[in-house]
Image (cartoon, rainbow, N blue to C red; front, top):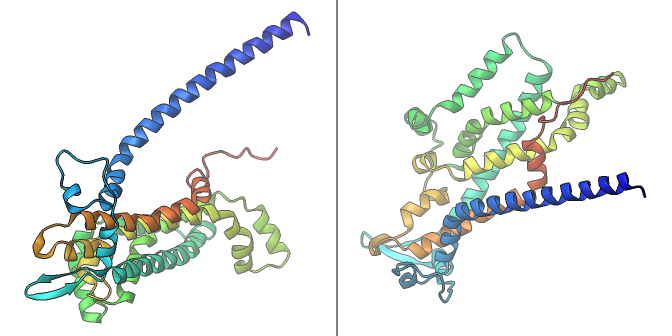
Length: 304
C-alpha cells in the first residue's frame, strides 16, 4: 500500500471516530430528555404497586414493598355512596373502551380511506374547498358542539348506546383520516394503476390490489393516531354514555374515591392498565408507523 493510501485510510478512520463520538453524545442527550418525559409515567406505574400509606408518604418512596391489592381492588372493590353499595365494574368499563375505540377507528379508517382515494384519483371542481370544509368540522372544540349533539342523541334515542358513541367518534375521526390517507394516495405513482386498467381490472380491483397494499403504513399511522384521540376522549363519553356503556376516562372520576377520598393507588392502577392497549398497538405497528410518518419526505426523481 502506498503512503497516500495509508494517509487516506487514517483520515477516514479518524472521521468515523469523530462521527461515532458525536453519535454517542446525541444519543445520550436524547436518552436524558426521554427519561425526563417518562418520569411521570414511571411514577404512575410505581404508585400502582404501592399501599395507600406508601402512596402518600412524605418524602416520596422510591423503594417499597410492591403489592397487587390496587389491581385486585379496581375489579372487585365496592364502597358506600349515598347509603348504598356501589360496585366499580371496571372490567365492563375497560371492555367498553376497547369496543368503542376499536369499532369507531375501524369504521373511520374504512370510510375515510375510500373517500380519500376518491378525492385523490377523481378530484372534483373545487376539490380543495371540499377538503377544507371537511377539515373545519374537526377544528371546532367539542364543547362548542356538545349541546346540539346531546339534543340530537336524546331525540333519536342513541344516548347511552354503543352505536351512538361509535358513530360519533367515527365522525370526529373522519376528517383526520381523509386528509392523512389522501396525502398517501397522492404519493403513489399511477403507472401501475394504468397498467392494471389496461389489463381489464375494475376500479375496485385497482384500489384493493394496487393502491391499498402500498399505503399500509399510512393505514397503520392513521389508525394509531385515531385510536389515541378516541381512547383518551372524556367530554363526549361523559355526557353521551350510560351506566352500561361508560368508558374508563369517565369511570375514573365517577367511581374512584367514594366517601373515603381519592384512592391514589387504585387510580394509578387504572391508569397503568389504561396505557397498556395503546402501548401494545403502537409497539406492534411501530415499523409501519415509522414508515407512515416519514412517507413522502423523500422526493422521487422524475424518470429520465
